[in-house]
Image 1 (cartoon, rainbow, N blue to C red):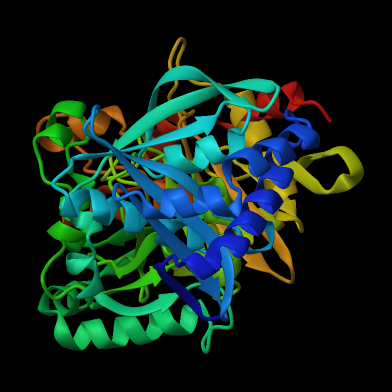
Image 2: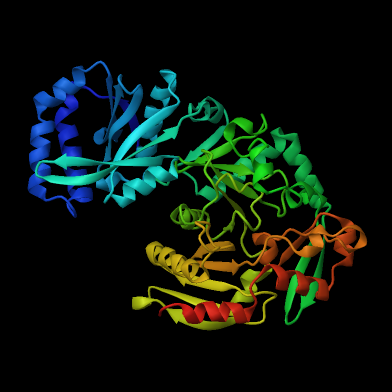
Length: 501
């Protein structure tokens, strides 16, 4: 599918009316009668009314075409009295939503704001249109007030919000970094193959990445029995920076975000993934293939806002790669910037161990997904399996609600997550967490263990950037680390027992 965005023309007016009607009918008919939608369309967006809008010097319109067909429409309008640029319309035909077209039209509006030396872009969204509100919030909009909006005889609440637009969305810093793009539509290569080509190219062009893999080639591993399960320990001095990264709010505020496109090393390139993420090679690898997938905008680490993308990424990479998520308070070295990781499948001990340690099972309604615990692992884990993305996402959210979070806090519960996809089914391994780092991390002298568990460690590969910790690690120390930072099987069983099903 070939996507093209261009300025609108008078000849587009009938297509604009069609786009408005079909999108309104799909999005608004649940709370606005169709007769009122039709009346508003005919009063506000007649052909002659569109002509007046078109002639307004403060209005810019854009059309998105898919294979020559107009499938999206966006319009901005500058309000002189407020000195604000509003995204007055952004509509995509239902059959073309989720293809990245909306992101392209939004970026064009952001570019217009920047071109006019404006620092903000404003938008209005009907409060009942929850899906659209979340879409804008994921892209950095903050809603600050609510006003009534009238469509014929129906009045609905209308949320008004804005986002700060910065130079990094202009595209210059991003465009020069693009090795390839993956939209998910008619791709010549699977995403895993694109990523492999990126890694091969980057290892030849980016000295820091080549050095990171040279360090990995010298890494040593040990296998240690912890109860009935085995944990591998890796000595990898290349991970020292990540393991010791300060993640307190003050330190985060005072450092440059190393995942923002403007701050990446000059040699670093990436794959634009589904218009919103940048697929990058990790310069401090733990595995022979190790990627970071970061949002192209500076959004906070949040699973609830990115869960569907996380599942889609696992599907696009499966079965060769698995996808990892570290919560903002338990392993993410950049909790202020949304990102995932991808590593080869079947290299984490937990992947094989889960199949042999199945515990109590909860079937969700209609059996669309199942949730079960594990027996005999080094810590408690919750496994979710299913063949439909919506059902798997619902199961994850059900577990997250059962885990809860800090009292009176909007923060997500502490967790790490590993996702794989093969045979048309997802398997997610979720590790509920108690804390980020064990007490031994903060000790002075010989008693210190420089271990900072994230998803890889919870998956049974414990990373030690210091040789003395690698040599000192034994079954008792590993048991104590996991007991301190993670739920045990009894705590997981309590969570499962509290879930409906």
